[in-house]
Amino acid sequence: MRNLTRIDRDGAKVPRSPMTAMLRTSLSDCLGSKALIVVLILAQALFLLPGLVGYPTLSDLAIGQEQASQTLEILLTGMESGAYDSAPDALKDINARQLEALTAASNAPYPSKEFFTAYAQYYDVEIECAKLGHTESTPSLYARSELIHRLASLENPEVYASATEMPTMYYLAFVVGLMPGIILLLPVALLTSGSQRRLGGRTLFSMAPVSRASERLACTAVASVLSLARLAAALLPAALLAAIRNGIGDFAYPVVSIADGVVSSSTIGDVLAQDAALMTFASLMVVALVAMAESIRARCGLGVAFALLVCPLIPIYTSQSTRWRAVARHLPRSYISCGSVVGLPVYANGLDIRAIPGTTWELGLVTLFLFAIALLAIALFTDMARERTATKRLARRFS
Image: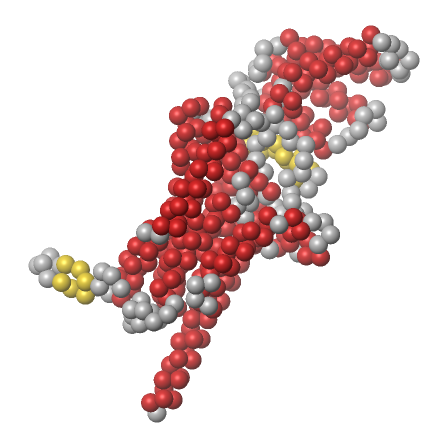
């Protein structure tokens, strides 16, 4: 164990307390891991990638003026061909109002409050038409309508055609929701594994006059604090690039998603806050999982954590035919990716974000917290039980 002594005011070497020396060594192991540094750099590169390659948002096809103009052209062609001549008067009135709204939207500057106000009026008529049974009523119709109405409520609405145009707040919410949770949480697993490494085997660390449970708890606390710093470090280059290019952005920018078949509306600020809370609890759960696995068998914590992080990427996990689908929403592995729980800012929002039904943000926080507490309790109980067993063996040997 390094740093067993310290220099006092008189220049004399004074022994450090075992716990202080252990914490310093654990911190050094966490920060000095080459594998962790490599994985962190890879994570930073992946979060930068959409902004570097110009990942498209399909805004023109979803809510843009091009889409409005194409719809207007189709409507005019149908009316000129006489397709609506024999239609009921109610339907003719709907077509006239659609034509008026689309014409105003096509002639308005884009993006602008005038455009989205006119386009919102068109979607009001579309929803009325769906309620009357003339067209199909789908969640995607209501989602587009809600997003356009929310954009119309902004004083100066902006639309981002690609990731290169996104300001910091929008970009962070976008990439955190887009990327699988393993990219953020694998560095946490590596960090925790490094902090727990010296507790296994016969080392000065393990022979310090401190209970193994106390050592485990202290190392877990160090890993928990550092894991939050690693989460921020993984996103920092992407945030800086977006800020330099396009500024901070608007926390009130609308985000509309379909979750469990229901249209939900929030803001970029709300999405980022929920993403931060979910990833914080998920990282604490991963830390506790690695600590529990290491307490049972040394050097297996990283493998166990990796299996947990990879599991949601396997198609069979989210398949509707799996038997555990009914209980999957109560498992922590269902909450390690923000996009399928909180959602992300998109314009083409026609698909349900939930890979597992019922995986709400609130349930995710409760599930992750309870599992983290339970896993840590198992780790500490295992350490105490092993120490008690070892003490009894020594007592029998020397009795």
